Amino acid sequence: MTPVAAVPFYQTKALEDVAAIAAGASAYLVTVEHTYERGPETAVGPSEKTALRLWAPEGTEGRFHEASHESAVLPPAKSLVMAHQKGRLIAVALLNQSLPACLLHADATNLPKIAGFGAPAPLALDEAEAAQVQLSVAEIWNTRTLAPQEWLFHPSVTPIPGTGDVAIAMNTADGHAVAWISDGMRRSARAAFVPGALNPILVQRGGKNYLLYREMPPGWSIYFHDLRYSTHYGPIALPLIMAELDAAGAAAHKIDLSKETAGDLAVGSVFDFAAAPGVGNRMALAVIAGSTSAPELRVYVTGESGGALRLLRSAPLRAVPDRLTMAATDKQILLGLAYKGRAAYEVEGLTAGWE
Image 1 (cartoon, rainbow, N blue to C red):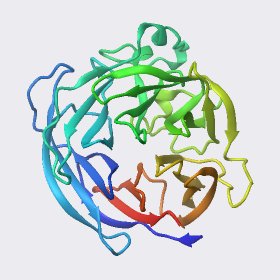
Image 2: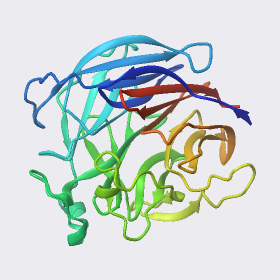
Image 3: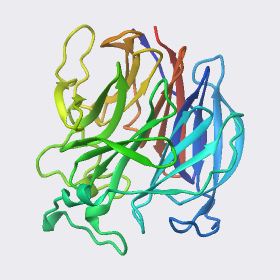
């Protein structure tokens, strides 16, 4: 197990989000920045001329250079998550305005260059899903447009190896994890609907769907605990669960990774986490664990044939980051972190091999 430290490489006052993408043997961190310059009206509402910078890792760990600087017309989002699949950049923008979210795609066959994004496609709960969202009066918040029961939170998008599809997962306002398989153009069949599952990420291994999530405690309000909307509660560490899903999208078998002690694995409760599929049945997992005063980044991996997670690297952090993102190639794991300072956001990155 090798210690590793992320190295700051970029500062910006206008960070919207940061994403990690893997394309073949290459991997990039993508910083998405507001310009506050309004673009044309779209099918999902207003748009903004947004700045996208792609950062490529160099030979020295933690060193990155700006590989391209793109301009894109995108909806102004609370969160923008991305994945690369078959020459396309697929993104989910979290809005919670007239629509909860939208799906976007762009030609990315010539990375680090990105062609313009196509028209956004609405992404929302269907009638049956929305009917299952139950909120008490104390959990309701003021909103000018979308009803709270229709809001979505904590989006993730994960490539499904061997296909051109991605897995999209989000939280409903009452803490259900809802996930769909998508071709990048529209949502398709629902793959998961699991109660009390925060920050969901759907990964596919060995032909089976697995949902990773933080276990929601009783009395948890999604909106008021979401750090992108409220800082009242601050970051709180929660147990990390991995559930094998059945054909109906329910949790058939759960493993509490926070309590697992096999091998080198001892995850503990986590403030945040990210997961990425690798070659074969490999999977990489990054967690922010420890305490608010002494947080720690830990990276876990499985073997190429799958199996148990093992601790690969760990390092202390100066604070719990505002953003954590990860992608993986067959040779490399790429992580990005962002901290919100008094004057600007500071973006850090690191790379690691699988061994």
